Amino acid sequence: MYTFKKEERLCNKVLIEQLFHSGSSFLCYPFRVTWLPSAASQHFPAQVLFAVPKKRFKKAVDRNAIKRRAREAYRLHKQQHLYNQLTGTGKKIIISIGYIGKELAGYEQVEKKMVKLLVQLCGEVAK
Image (cartoon, rainbow, N blue to C red; front, side):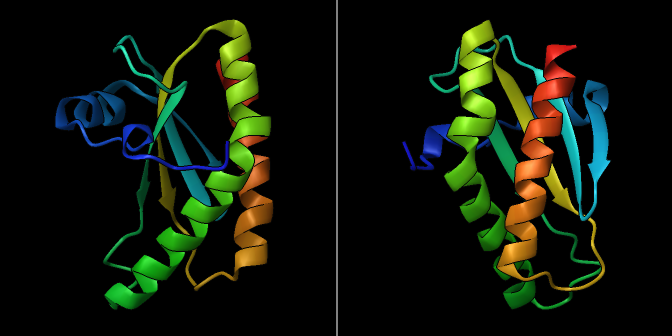
């Protein structure tokens, strides 16, 4: 239940291209979410990609810290806020979560925003 396996990560370059060219997006500061309904056969209701810009965070340590915090918050809250609704409707999606904040956020803030983001994403997918 609280796992984040390789199959849940978005690695396919073709799908990533499709996501950024024809996906819908919204802001939930400090995150920008781009998502697309997926026709590809995947084991999980959602595949996700995390991104932090090198332009804003020069040090890899900082980029990795933000990605680690975001992945952890996603891992803990995806089931109740995202997967349950997606499996209920039988939909599968691919998601990109990009960090657009200007400063390094603490885990508590990242977790709070991740929950808000997942709830908002469910609303967008349900439309």
